[in-house]
Each structure stands twice: as structure tokens, then as C-alpha cells.
Amino acid sequence: MERNVQMIKRITACLLAVLVFFYSVPVPVSAAESYNSHFESSEEKMLDRYYGTSLDGLGEHAAILSSDADDTYEADVDSALLIDASDNEVLASYHAFDRVYPASTTKVLTALITLEQCQMTEEVVIKNDITFDESGVVAVGFKKGDKVKVEGLLNALLVESANDAAVALAEHIAGSTSAFAKMMNQRAKELGATHCNFVTTNGLHNKNHYVTAYDMYLIFKEAIKYDAFLNIVKKANYTLEYETASGVPYNIPMETSNLYITGNYALPNDIYMIGGKTGTTSQAGSCLVILTENSEGEQYISLVFHGATKDILYNTMTDLLEKTHK
Image (tube, rainbow, N blue to C red):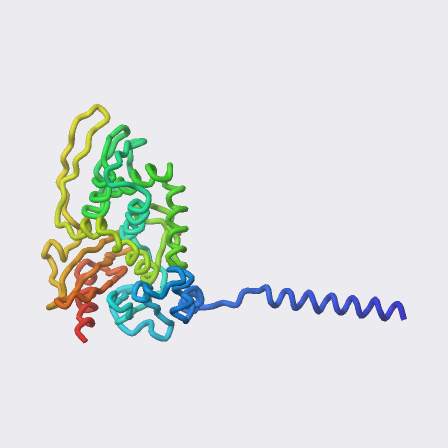
């Protein structure tokens, strides 16, 4: 009898172990399903989680893209997304949940954190000479001891896409670029951008540095709440003023990398540029995220990642924005 009782206990223990294992193994889900789980299907629940319990700001929440609604648009790029920002409606998407390299569109998040953490008039003292191993990297050429305002760094970051401006801001705010990258990942998750990973502050290539178009939409949507951000990303040019460690003043003229603003490419009829951010590396291709509006004041956020050429990028973006003509 005692032997039978011991046998039953052993069998019961084995069954419990099997059940524990079964329920502890994660069930694979698609990125879209994971996003939807994160945001929840109910707008009220999502607002409660991300914007507090008040429903007064119903129009402030993000557009929700389901797996069924993805890939409603075809393009010769890796990923594309068009959102009607006025009513949070997805108008077109293509592989919006796929991982892509963001290149310098990364700087949207760097700028967002800077605007949240700093005053525009703060003076930044460059901690070390900022250099890069890659050739042809866009940079101001900051040296140790140079003094520049946060406003100047943000303009250099977003207008000309200066990579050392991103490093300078990161070191000023967090002490190091690695510490700042942790802030970037934390802030992204707070915004619901759950399928990205930031390693650099400027978007120079790293295989572990990636986003999705939907993630970048969420980040960009937060950044455009700041007038200072919008005032910078709409500029065609800017003159950076700073001083060297010995007090020698420098004035450096800069031109936007947004070829819609420079007039190299035309937007569709009745669509007008507000501003945005470009990105280009050999691995990421040509990337762009922009905010536009029509003559009735309806605004659109559109994103394209990995155009093989600038022609493909801008032609795809223009075609995408044609979808705003309902």
C-alpha cells in the first residue's frame, strides 16, 4: 500500500512538471499580434494605459495597425507607412512591422530626449574630440573644449544630420553614448515602440541597431508635439555658431538633407511639407520620415525605409502621399 502511494506521488509530480513546462514555454506571436497585445484592442484601455484615465484626449492616441491591415501597399523599398495623423487612420502600409536599419532617422529619438531633458539655451562643453572610423561621415568636427548651445546642436543634428552633434548631446545628457542608448530604449518602450533596439545615438550602422516603420511612427509622433522640433525640421538651412576651447568663434553654414525642402523633388498636389528627417547608410539605404498637410489642415505622417537610391526613396514617398487624395 505504501509503495502504491509513493508511485502515485511520483506520477503526480511528473505530471505537474510537464504542465509547468508547457505553460512556461512562450508561444510565438507575430510582431503585429505583439503590438496589438501591447496596445490592446480597446481605445479606452489603451488611453488608460498610456495617456491616463481621461478620454478627453481621444484624438491624441496612436493609429493602431493590425496584421490584417499591413501590406496594403506595394513598393520597391523595404518598408513604408502612411498615417492620417488628424484622425489616427492607417492609409497604407508595407512591411511596417519588419525590422529595418533606421540610419539617421534615429536622430528623431535623440532630439526627443534632448527636448525632454534640456533647455535650448544650455551650454554644452564637448568632452572629447569626436571622431568616427567610417569615412564620409557628416560631422561638424567638434573638438574637446568646444562650447555650443543645445539649440545649435539640435539644429546641426536635424538640419544637416551631423553625427557628432548626436554624440555631444548624448554625453551631455547621460555622460556617455552607451548610457544614452539605454535612455533611448526605455523611452521608445514607454511610447509603445516595442520592436526596436537602439545602440547608437546617430544611426551609424550597427547590426543590433534597428527599428520598424511602426516604431518610428510612434517616436516621430511624440517628437512633433514639440514646436522646437518642428521649427528645426522645416528649415532649408542653418548657420551653427559655437566657440572653441580658446574662445575662437566659428560660424558653419548648413543645408537640409531633406530634398523635398530643397526643391529637388516635388510633393503631390495639395500636399505641403511641414518637416522631417532623412537617413542614409550603405546598409540602411535611403530613409525618410516626414510630416505633411493638405490645404484643409489635415496632417499626415509618412515613412519609407531602405530605398536603394534617393530617386526610389522620394518617388515612393510621393506615390505614398498620393494615397491621401481620398
